[in-house]
Image 1: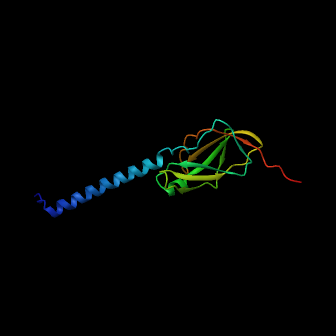
Image 2: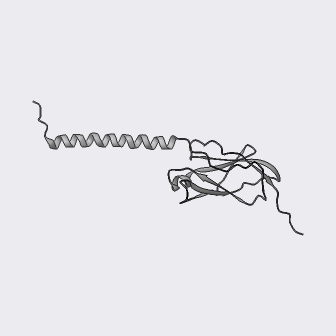
Image 3: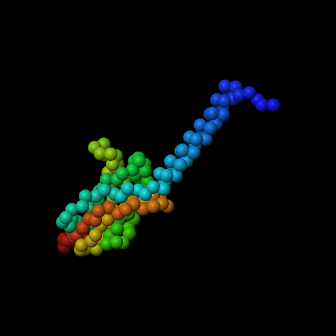
Amino acid sequence: MRRALTSASLRERLSVVVSAVVLAIVSIAATGCRGRRPAAPSVESTPKPITVVGTERIGWNQAALSLAEANGFNYVAYVDGVRVALVDATCQADPQISLYACAARLPPMSPGAHRFELAIGRPGGTESARSAVLNVIVQPLKQSR
């Protein structure tokens, strides 16, 4: 004998189906966000090399879904093609633009000319494309005697 569907049992079944669909959408969205490749850091390239003493901080704009995501990225520099972690990188919200303003200390570099690029990655995940190349010349301050 078939049981007649009442409006209450129909609502209950519909509620279970809607909950399952919402859960599936949330799971797919979360997986997609973790798997997507982060946007490369945005730096302004200059035609002339930038002279630094080596103690400065470098700043860039970073696209991210939130400030927490921007601060959760692993920031790296490529100095002459060699990967160096920027462990002290931090980001702040910039009310003037829809990106996050980030900065880190320059990694140690020997005196002379260098190619400098930035990239970011997710912990245990993919790394972004590298930023535009910055040509820098490290000219340490002379020690006074």
